[in-house]
Length: 310
Image 1 (tube, rainbow, N blue to C red):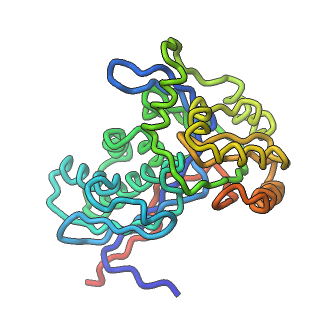
Image 2 (image 1 turned 90 degrees about the vertical axis):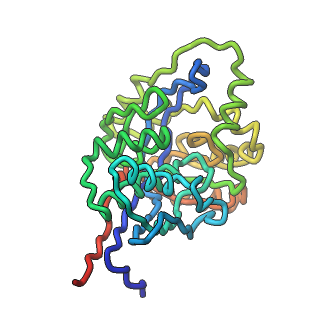
């Protein structure tokens, strides 16, 4: 039996993501790497319950909750603070985060928290911002935050935050192998820099990948999955070699590191096969947790709003 929600509470859910393609260019003068990526939101979620409070504060439960800061370093905390400053609202909120997405796993869990917090606080405080306005604020918080707002499948350019929706027919089924020892995005990019010193090229998205998404064909898509951060992620987390070896011995169409890792996502031809792949990888005992998810999934959206009884 679930506990009753506090009066005035707003519950928003936002998805984690997989990068179907992540092409990286050399770091520019602004200190950022130009990216060309294709995001797909999947059915693994962050839940944020926004409850009226005198100050802005955060509490966290769920997967890897002990690794998540609850002070101003927390992206959800920063999102609420940014929204209050941008709209001139003098209000507090208690953001109760229940994590389903791995922390430091390359699946955008913190970004999903931020997106959910923006929408939840907008609804709680009645600031009435349009989705486009929330998207501008999201981009100030991090490159993956705007996508967590929109969800589905999208192309991201620039730092990954210049989004264009992408058509993806049907559903795609994924098996996730989760490694508890997370990797931070900055350390993976530093390793990429060392491996690609002096490189000069512009990242791009494969037309064939986009066509496979439109066709809804997982077998075609598998041939065009790409992650330029995969090699440095494996160097930093050698356990990933055994994960890939385990997937190679299954019916997985292709496996790749998601984002900056270390989560590995393997594409399956259908749901039943995904379940069989997950069972085999669990038996191989190469990952700390194995999950089956699908995509594309919705972006941040309202689950429940509990009005005051007065």
